[in-house]
Amino acid sequence: MLSLTNDGRINVQYGDKFYKLDLAFDRVLLFFKLIEDDSLSESEKTLQALKIFLQRSNESDEHFISNLPQDSNFLDEVFKIIIHEIGDSPYGKYEDEDDDNQVASERIFDYQRDAGAIYASFWQDYGIDLHKQIGKMQWSEFKALFDGLSDKTYFKKILDIRQKEIKSDMSSEEKTNILDAQRYFALKDPRIKQMQHNTSTLASMFGIKGGK
Image (cartoon, rainbow, N blue to C red; front, side, top):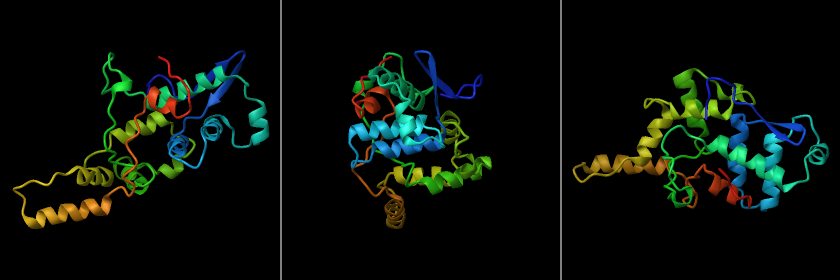
């Protein structure tokens, strides 16, 4: 969650060492793409996720792996922090809400498929070129701006089309236009459900028990 008192960059302390987590928005989006990749095993996903968030750009895989603590407690700590940071929200959740009982709603957008609309909308509302923010803008900053996109943006108009209901008092032409637009902007894979950014859902994909 975005804070106005720090820049969102996080260090994980384990023993007497500190490990810098890179939570730039592009890395988080790579992580979302990774966990939907059915071609990888859980152990492969775990390693790739660690590389996304912890590996420095000029560091070889061998050096990176050899410098990680060979301890499952370290993995637990790292993933708990990652899951908390990318799933935390200031709104929409009560303190006594049970994450395990949340029902996944139908997905209405996809960061990969809607990338062009999101890019155009950031430019339209904020004058921000997201390509120039790769490796710079933190996830908390991106998410705050993403959630604040105005209804006039291309992305929000697409969401409106996808969620628009066909009503009985509409003319045949109106119904046809809406259905045609919904088919055009439909997400192509109906198997994908909206990812719930909470500890129980993401942690389970890595076989990690979430904590509070």
